[in-house]
Figure 1 (cartoon, rainbow, N blue to C red):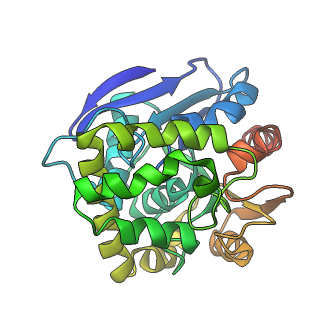
Figure 2 (cartoon, rainbow, N blue to C red):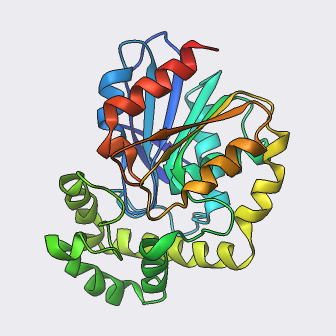
Length: 282
């Protein structure tokens, strides 16, 4: 992992380099950049793949105390990250809450580098926080950081991780990755502090209808866009994929079978092929 110091703190990221089309890949809550390891292995021979670990609960370096850890604030951090790396003609890809961040960047005109977007089974419309998993996590964020850490200790147990209120409906095959993602919040007080701040900001954004308002601006996005949805998704309603694609002037929908929300874990090769076809057709 490479590091870069941004206005909110130090961000770790993977960058494969190369001269191919640039993909910036964003993960969701309680995840890190390793969500994308499988697709990156397939895509990197022909693409420059850049995957930051954002301060969403599985990061390893606490953010500054005054960092804006709301979703709009983290979207601005992504824009700052792309600017600092001098990335241009970027296709921004997001899964789970990473897809919500992509929508914010699509609708807000925050980055001139943005030239295309891929939304992969993600938070949208009024499904925010999404499903049992998101609602349970955000409810736990009301706890003080110390008690939140106590609550999260149960995630050390695989039977708990596989519950529908945890990651059981998020991924069919990715429990090893989930285990890694839990370590920072279980062991670092600064990460627990950041995570509680993020979760409370998500709750406030949900009350304000953030993603509903964001969706109303998506028809203004004039670049190519692709929506990829898991046909068996139990957290992100499958009909939301079609609704998002219909909102985008140059959008289309592709469904992926035998996967839950975290398609990069459940069907990495299939997702990489879909993204590669999208970038090569442009």
